[in-house]
Length: 368
Length: 267
Ligand SMILES: Nc1ncnc2c1ncn2[C@@H]1O[C@H](COP(=O)(O)OP(=O)(O)O)[C@@H](O)[C@H]1O
Ligand SMILES: [Mg+2]
Image (cartoon, rainbow over all chains, first blue to last red; front, top):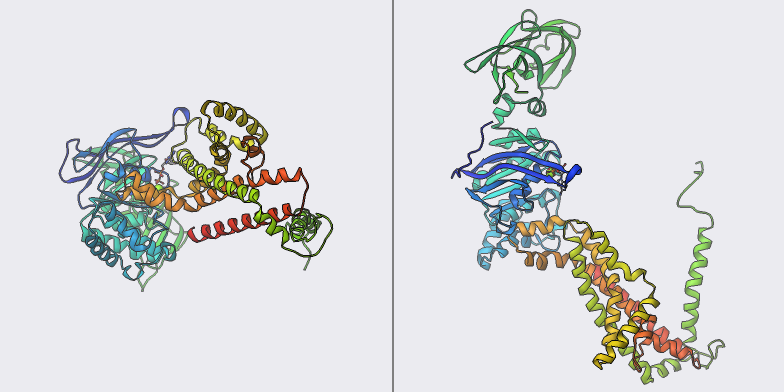
């Protein structure tokens, strides 16, 4: 993984460097974040992705200023913001619970930040109107916040956070309380607002699909550490660690023997004894054993030949595609995903002996 | 349909116990109120309906003074106790937990556990000394004493409200550029109002009702309504005392009702 540059860089909006956060002392101490370094670029839709409890909210709260790192520095546009309390940081948050003020109307909620910044009355009115229009909430401006639905509350929270035009917007699982259809709509809306406003978004989610569809770049986190940072394509096609490969999408793991590395490309021997080429994960440390991953859609079932062979164990039909589980001769199970077509079935039935053909460039050697 | 063997909602004998308890609680009060309208001098034999004793009580200068004094003390003590309790509640709920915090809770609530008579005697002794030093012997002592024992009553609902409040609201305000004072004024305080009103109401009623501490702390001629009534009971008792008690009861219930509705509207 490339280290973020320790020197201030104008293109970097938020630079977290060597962040450690420890809760409690002594034997009951908990390391919520363990040496986290991420550099988030200006105007980027950046996502922190990881299972619940991995420290996403904690990192966000430190960027907002509600929590202070035990170690490490956070820079905003090159400037160390350790000493700035939350109300002096040009960063706004859309809270996981929305945290709308229940004693204020929708309009008053959106105006709150502008009033605190001391904007003139006329300017506030214009800006609030603009924001309510952006989130399609003009009609409900005078509603109390307990008289609107979850999706509407979400929009108000967004308008309230965007109104002061912050440099960075933090969003803590803002869509997780919405139902599936609304969530899909809001994903597109959020993406639109990000590109319209040009504000840097730091988005937190535990939903890998959401992360893949929305982000410019993703940081995959587990147990307080950042395992990999990259574009959705990097993360999906070139996972660095077993956790990343497993957490995002479905995948096949093969234990192989390392034969040699030439110009950054590895030769590995599969359990079947056949050698194939594989790309190397970033930060790979040479070892005799190697774990190779192949995505199910990057392999084909064939009647003869192929680099692996086994017996069809299970066939699961999914409408657009079919998952074929093959019990390999060496014991493990390999899944192949095949596009369905109208005219023919998947071409095999349970109990058939088949071969598996791995596409060139499809295999990746993990670093762990 | 088979009858369930055990149903938590149906407890044999519960109705009887409840009826008995309500009777024990409300029958004496009802009797007291009825006899307030007695035309005769007696507390036990009915001499016809009359408002005589209400007029008598209302025209009695001593009753008027005592009622007025009770009100002044209750309003001042409840106000000061509520302010102190609000500050104490903020200090004990808006800091991260630290060693000694539960000790503080206990300390604030201790007056609830100290027998009132002990507090009364202690205050009597202290105030006697202070009176000699300063020469002041006004209502201040009673107000101070009432403030002291009212604080835990005001503290409880305020703290409960603060603890139940979603702290991300205050964080959201800070996130939207509100400095700490504005967070308090614009978010914490408005959301806390029902708790503060409930605390004030409790403190007010507790102060209005107090006998033991007032009896010990008051100087000559500083009777509150309850201590005046106690004094009257030692002498010839007429239904005037019933009339005062009935009026007192109506006042208390009316106040609690009013506060209750204010509270509900604001919440
Ligand atoms: N204030 C706190 N005190 C103690 N532990 C905390 C605190 N905040 C978070 N944690 C712990 O830190 C870990 C990470 O939490 P969090 O950042 O909320 O995870 P996520 O948002 O990824 O679900 C969890 O184990 C959580 O219990
Ligand atoms: Mg979280």
